[in-house]
Image (cartoon, rainbow, N blue to C red; front, side, top):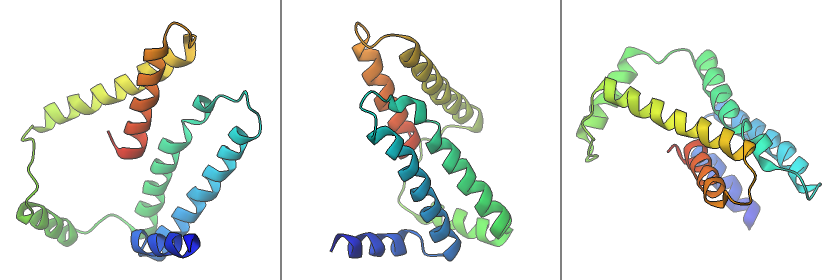
Amino acid sequence: LVASAAIGLWNKACGQPDAKVLAGFCCVVLIYFSSELIAPPDSDGRKFMWIFPVLIIFGGLVTYFYRGPPDADAASKAAAAAEDSSIDHFGVGRVVGLLLLALVAAIFLISFVLSSVLEYKGNEYLHWFGAFWRTGTVIWGG
């Protein structure tokens, strides 16, 4: 039952064959790195946080080079669909958007460095904030 649900979700989320191959590859890589965390009880999971952004960038590059750059017709259709949707926009310009992205990236890096340099005892709030920030940024996009 669980396997059937997983296959159904996989087929729905990854409709095209290249997306299915990428998803399978990423799952194998993540299982490999998580098995390193399961075996030793004293292992630190923060050493493996780099794998998520690397897989995201790898998937984007493989998709770009496999499918090629999106054509102008698809981009105009996507823009028209976005305008017709009921999604509200923040209304910030490109400069403010880039500044916000830089702020998110800076907090991501600072939280990673501080939580790896400072001891947990006495800095519990920093470690918890860093863990939630990195998880939210990498997995859920911010």
